[in-house]
Length: 164
Image (cartoon, rainbow, N blue to C red; front, side):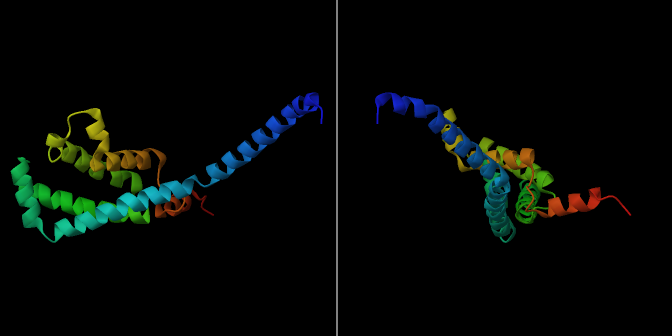
């Protein structure tokens, strides 16, 4: 094959790559619900689990909050424990999803500012903290919503369906 022939085929190759790329992006875009489902399950199950553990040992959580200097440690131990349990469960099933991210996000901010404060000396320490990662995932869920694999989606469809 002549060298000039290879150059002449280049636009066809580039076009084929562009078409394949566009098809791949369309496929990925249709699957964005899966990323939202995985994010909800990951942080939802985590908070459900930690909340359940805290609910079963409120005295320990209260003592830890006292050590951190958190005001009203007994009240806040109950608040945080049940928030994690209930909001984690709601994230897993995808009900009141965006609302559920708020108390969990606040808990993560408080955790970063209190329990993790001594470990954070730079932005790299901050982004390396698990609590920061959970906070980021919660913000993503709050902004993008639960996706269609959630009870919120079913409720929304039912509420917006025209009445007959």
